[in-house]
Image: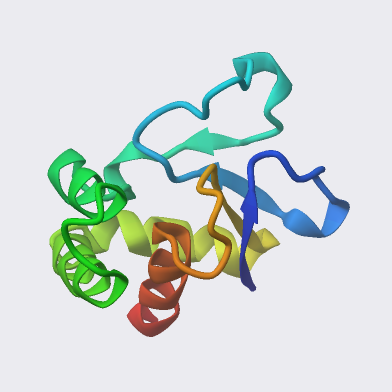
Length: 115
């Protein structure tokens, strides 16, 4: 099972392996206060892509397409996380305010199709 949660949401026993998938550390969050097992920057969108999306240069559909292309070059890292998902469940942690259009959701969908 793969799920997505904001870093500001309380951890739950059902979260399994918790991975921060943002390239930047979440603003206002102390490192010792975030319940996470790993910070996986390698599967985060590139800085240029992140800036284009959050700067509203590109829309979510275009962002998603480009991000999937970036992820396709990191399949081995994705497979490693899928193994964790199969073992204990996987929660992708993100800091974005928008809970319906963010990179963690694109990553979760990409991982689900990677199987």
